Length: 227
Image 1 (cartoon, rainbow, N blue to C red):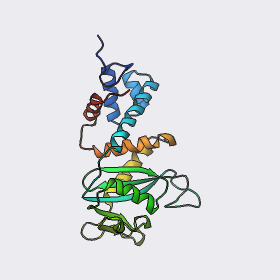
Image 2 (tube, one colour; image 1 turned 90 degrees about the vertical axis):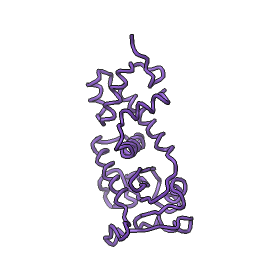
Image 3 (spheres, one colour; image 1 turned 60 degrees about the vertical axis):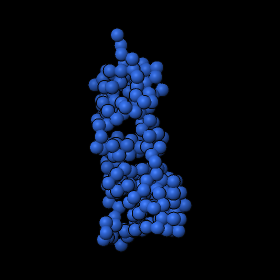
């Protein structure tokens, strides 16, 4: 008798097969390898991977605002170099804004630009006013004190300054950027409309790096099965 799949509504795979798929997803294997190891159709694996990433993105988006000491930064994902443009504003790149709580979790959001209004709008929704903010010298972070953030420390990367006394740096968020870009590069090209889901998967994996990701995902799905 086939065990009822309590992780997926109207599932077309058994609970045993689905758990095997989730275990391999947690190990960060690509869909092609998962299909070969489980005997499932590649399209079936891709469909469930998509559903898992959508559920992960939803969980990340619902994260509560943070307090304490946070680091903020933007990063640019896409071609390594675009002719005629470098750094901020480089064409063909996706801009991602990140907030990292020291010794804790990261939150990312794709943004249309790195202007002050855009970045401050996200900060005001995700970071408590009593927080201590660390950033680089980008002008998009000007005026944080004026909107209620009393403690704002900066490192001036443009002057080759990467840390100052009293722990003033943004090494945590920069470390996450490196981890995310390395992982995404292994995917050998991600379709633009799927980039958000893969970004949120990087965020989720980082935030739960000390957890058993397989057990965590199963618990999430037991509480709220996939459709």
